Amino acid sequence: MSDAVTPTGFRVALQQYRDIRLFYIFLLGCSSGFPWVLIGSAMSGWLKDANLSRAAIGYFGSVTAVFALNFLWAPLVDRLHLPYFHRTLGQRRSWVVSMQLLIMLATFAIAFTNPGFSLLWTSLLALLIAVAAATQDVAIDGYRIDIIGQNENKLPAAAAMGVMGWWTGYSLPGYFAFHYADSWGWPAVYLGMALMWLLLAALTLMVKEPASNRDLLQQKAAERYQNSLQHPALLWLTVTVVEPFAEFFRRNGMTLALLLISFVFVFKLGEAFLGRMSIQFYREVGFSNEQIAEYSKLIGWGATLVFTLLGSLLNVRFGVIKGLVLGGITMAASNLMFAWIAEVGPDENLLLWTILLDNFTTAFSIVAFVAFLTSFTGVAFSASQYALLASIGNFGRTTVASLGGSMVDMLDGNWSLFFIITSLMVIPGLLLLFAIVQQLKKRRAIAE
Image (cartoon, rainbow, N blue to C red; front, side, top):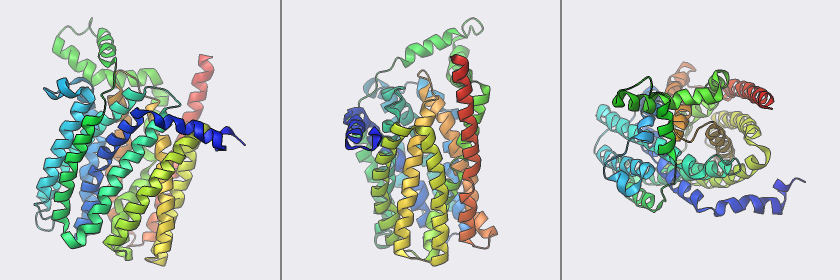
């Protein structure tokens, strides 16, 4: 029996979680997950109750496409110092707190719209929330990388705490939203969620700003261009915008970098299609808002925390590559469970097991996924480079997956076939992962 599956092995692995830095990552993860309730699951429920079509609900989700574009302004989060906030909070926390306050104001405003009559205003405010949340994510990811570093043993634990925080920020407000949606109404629910952002901002003030030599490393990076670029503004712009991505390709090599980008784009596509249309599916198949709150949000949250912790321990022992393979296989299996529900109908026992498997899949694969991406980032431009990789994955999740409603319509509402098709989407990702592993082996052989 390996050390990882013995009581002693688990105790040793669990000792990592005594690190206070992981608690900070958890708190910021809560703030990262919450916006997806506002513009994702809760909004889908509101739009469904407003009698919007499947296609309209699917396309509304396109506002989250900005998560696929945040790498464009991510260098500013690495380099630009916000007035006043930077002096009192530091580089990472200043960006996080300012975005939290902006999201709070937009959430308050969206409570006074009616998507059934003014979808444009609701969409614009949702877009504002998405932009602020995408910017916040850049700062939070940079924070996690800065405070943990490139310690391979710590990466899965840091990823796990970020994931557990994300799902706490997504599931608990989501439970609140769906539990009270029928009795309070969606506008009142959104007012309540706006107030929750004050609590998140207060918790962020408890988080310690990471120590970093980022400014020194960025200055050294500027020396690469000083001879060719004499104008200070042009030099600053080049180091800020060009160097983060140029350094990523130099360090990893063109072939490996392109394989990595392709893998990130396709790996979680099937999961994204499921996530985008799950609320619509639950309602059409016959589940109530309260059932969605209890099973998808509350039970799903608890399952995610347990499975995320387990996933981090197993990823430390067996490695993130094997974690990604197992995550991909279970991802396909969970989609097939949803196809089963589509055939059986609103069976609560089947829903419970489906939620458990889906949350195991999500928790296990994303721990490996985040740790895997983090290992390819550099210190000087950590937020920018992680944002580049994450945004590519988000592009698939937010833009391609927005076609989910139209896809179900093309299949004449055949949800079973929809979920079967999405389960097959994991195959290209696993093939690309195999190619990446081969490239890493070649690089190690050359280095030796």
